Length: 188
Image (tube, rainbow, N blue to C red; front, side, top):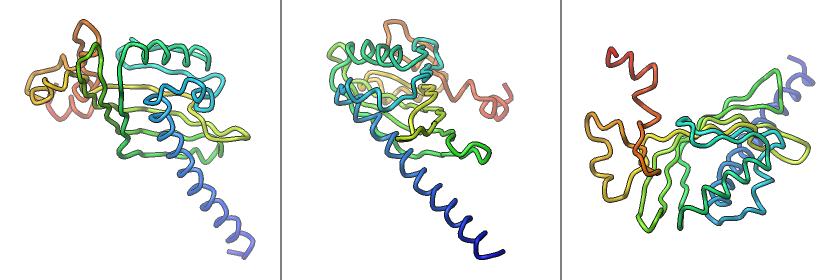
């Protein structure tokens, strides 16, 4: 390997480390913007053609303005919230330096109609870098549970698939029961 190739390889590796940090900060900013109800900060999170979806189909928006309006409506129905991200896996597209995908493991604490609630969340994301920053191009949101805090001790009990209770009618949780690996493991 020539010194030029080595310098180019080092530069690519450094760029990926910087990209990973920037995407991590984007993910953190999302939580802060939502929790702080910073509607003015939302546009910087999303590409103009962003797509936001929830796996249960209750959230669907295409385009930055539609996504902001979706979140404005969602946030209007809840009280204080605290989004916390845990681990993330970010995968870069070697063919397209300005694209990456990610899975973010998260939870949220919030109040809806005066009732404390907790949620386990997975975000499946597509990130895109423009001239200024990395942004969300796609954000798919899934819930393992979304329950009253008082119900949390029972939320992971056996056979309890109706763990998504943010709306008036409980719905089946988005994961893990629907995952192919889960189904295969249990022979379903």
